[in-house]
Length: 415
Image: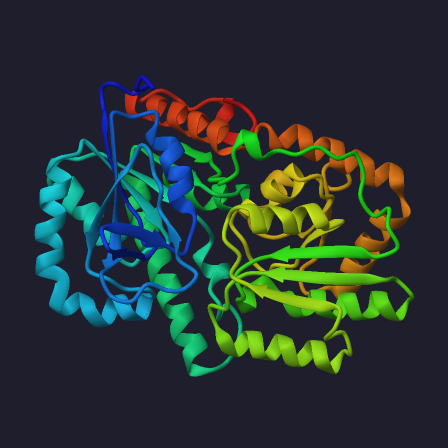
């Protein structure tokens, strides 16, 4: 594909997702590289600069089968605290490696939240490399310890505030800031007027299915796709399922997602037992992006997101591309893509009763349900990786030329 930004053909993305190298192949447990590969198709050269390990590869890691991008490694860490423990011995080597790879590229993209972002942004500016920042979520609300009084929670919030200051410093000197959700616009646009809403879906046009209705069987299956973190609010969904069953609704719940925090998973399992819904809730663990996950969506009737904080969850696009009506909390970037009673139902976070009411409305009101499904299908065609990559590349082209971003900066469905 011909580059649409020929004046800056060499792009480097500083990404914090951990990658693993084994037998000459590269693996990752997360999915951003899929969107990155679609975005890379619009440039002559596109490289991810990532934490790379040649140690044991997690069982849930997926083979990276990128067609358009290259992956280069730096010293390995999985969490912020691990980065700060190792940076003191790795800083000199990191900067030397980064200098070499920066020299081969003409634009540096920094995806945040990331503890290494400001350090490498300063290196880029020193080398006269322009920067663009991708803000994948609100670090202040999406940390696992956004609430809580423990010392660990207080330290986590301290790190979150520090990362926010670093992000704002990068935003001030960047050519453009792309934020995953309208919630972030008031934070970054005053610092940098060239700020736009962006999304990074994994789903492609070819994955979109077609069904006109759900909730037509005797059992209603709810699906929740999320990493098992306290910020995902899964306990409120469990309580909603228990109450729905108490009211005579034959509902079952499938939860797909790896246990980033095993203690939280044990708490959820214990809660399901206490609520006497252990047999009606299945925790599938990490489910790879592909046929198994797609089958979970196809078997489901309603897609529920119970998060306490979010960026722009990829699972929203995935769920409605498989014909699922969406119930989601009104947090983070979710209202950017879910309009109440048009393409989903929005509920308050930490509110099981509102989840119950929304699920019952979808079950009992076929007209509302089918309208949400139809609108979801329409939007899903504008929310694929192909469309959003082309849209983002176009916005970057304008920003790098110094042109205003226009209406497309505020609307994910405008190219």
